[in-house]
Length: 67
Image 1 (cartoon, rainbow, N blue to C red):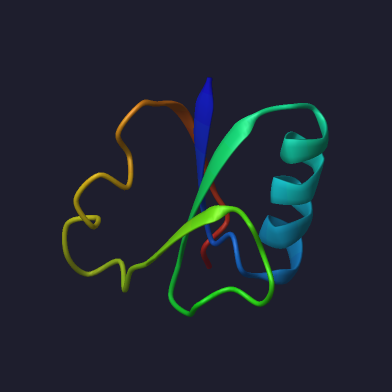
Image 2 (image 1 turned 90 degrees about the vertical axis):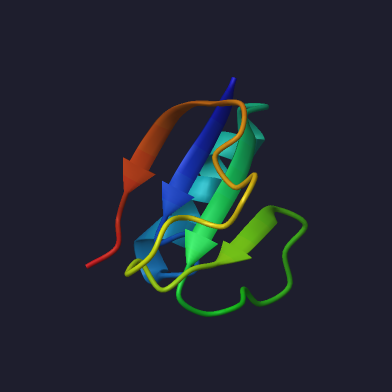
């Protein structure tokens, strides 16, 4: 399963991504700023418009940590 994490570059989101990946989950991150060093697929998104094309493709679940 692929899981989208909205707010993946934040303090909690980056740790959630790390934990999911440690469990072998395919993760995609959506955030307002580019990530630091990471090999997780990431899309910069301001949240005011539709998510970038393909960002949610194949995702079976989502985690919202953008606040």
